[in-house]
Length: 245
Image (tube, rainbow, N blue to C red; front, side, top):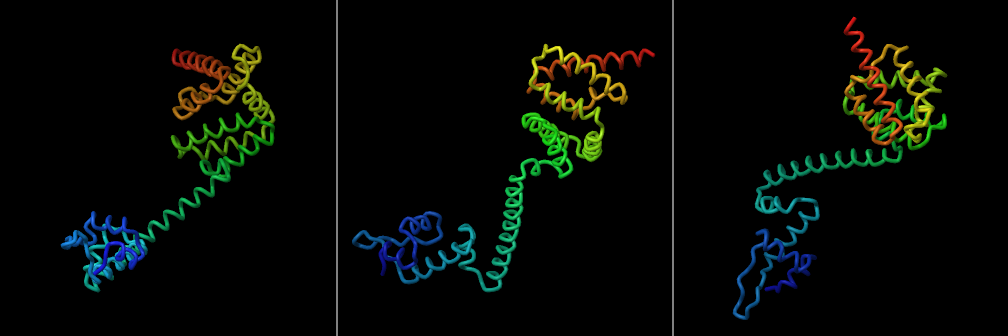
């Protein structure tokens, strides 16, 4: 007969582990003898070794008791199920590893390669890292809110880098993030951006995803808040005039 310490040593576990197995009903706890001690049989040692072996193999404790009492066909089927579950977990871990590895590429975790390339082009043009991060976040919103429109928006963004006038306006607009909202340059930029929208017959003020993106930008820049307010007001006036006609 074995003491609990001897039993634990024989199986290569701690006394605390043995007591935990008692608590969850995995290993029966013997009655105390006349001296007040619990004594364990050799069979208890065999059972504890089997429990430890299964646990070390990754079998959840909740499933060990059933496996301990299963017939060979049932045992084989249960192990096959566990193997399938482990493979699923391994696949999930592999996907998690790929996502973690993608963190090293920054924007690549959130955005398609074409958009990441556009952000890198902006950096090459001298756009501040603050402005690039803000633009990245707006594209993250676009991707979440309007994924079906994202490819066309990216195409338009990529093409815009080939137009010197658009690039000049883009550089001015990104620089304006840090301007005072009452800087005279803000008024000039409002005129240029309004003319840009009119020339292209666009009205972005009614676009849901764009509105959320504009809100994000406005939260970061008082100058942009003022510009967006004025541009939205002017677009509304044009719509009203068009309706009146």
